[in-house]
Length: 332
Figure (cartoon, rainbow, N blue to C red):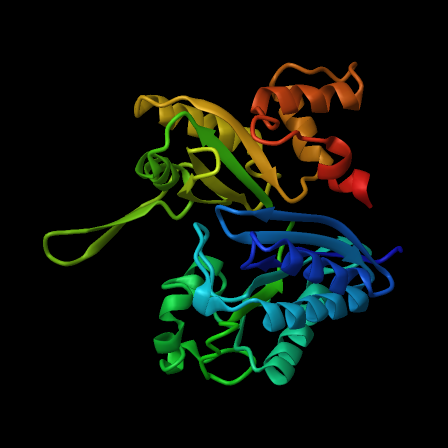
């Protein structure tokens, strides 16, 4: 396959293995698509699926999985740590090789139109596919989450880009678009205090924090890292708090820079960082950058440089980090 698109749909189900298997099978059944990873998280109650393939095949696989999610996932019963607005929460299309960003925008539009028309699910476009500035940021679209969606759809400002402005109680809404490669990266703290994790997130994320002044006006204090989104979560399975991070452009802020920034802020709050984890896949370049930062040299093999990164970032603290299963270049 010369023209490759990656798709990383996030589904609001991370506990029922039968449903997770059904989602994966719906993708596997299509030709010219390769399923790379399926990563459920019981605390987030969310599964991140990664697959690549020829553009139209990837678009069709995304629809097939969304249709399966609409069949099996009921949002009226969903609870989890991660923000979400629907059963198929977000479906980004990412150019890998031989495909442009505008072509991925078109794939998102074609996918969204079909989901709205055939599945009666409201669809919003975000990132490079956004048709208005206020919808570029996923967090803005998700504000209030599924629980606020019924009222949100009554507001003309939040008319969906595709589908009717009708509340679909079972499936919620779906967000789709095109974007640069995103690294989902969580940093583990030696505490189970979610408030500490969230305070660190406010300090480092690009959007920072907004405070209300005595006169009713608001002041925004930007965070320290560009191209970073973050929030604090509690991972009950391990009884630890995490700073859950999305690195939206690793060429500007690689994961190791975020890791060091979290360590610095955690120390001021009397907390240690114990390790971190990658959710989904990561480009090899990002780990090589980390390896060199932590002392690996060009004279060492790539394998050695990557191992230095794994050890220094504590990527195997919660689950073994296996390069052959976590680095996208090794999977394709």
